[in-house]
Length: 89
Image (cartoon, rainbow, N blue to C red; front, side):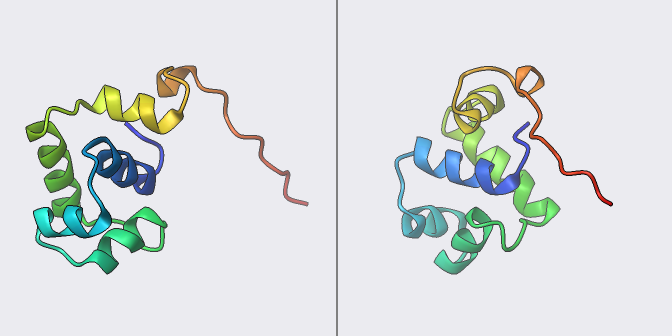
């Protein structure tokens, strides 16, 4: 699946061509919640994550499609190069 939940939320919303307001209304949450999820300030709860996956599925989005769109290059997450890390001294 997508590395970061914020990317998952953003990709699902954009694939459905919805504004944050429309997306929030469809899910029964506030626009602020969608914004915080997309900006990585908060993560959806387990129940909210399950709801998001179900919502995407009901709208014809597969997890593979979402993962490819989030990566931006069409490759699977396993094929992507890891980000460089800085050694702690």
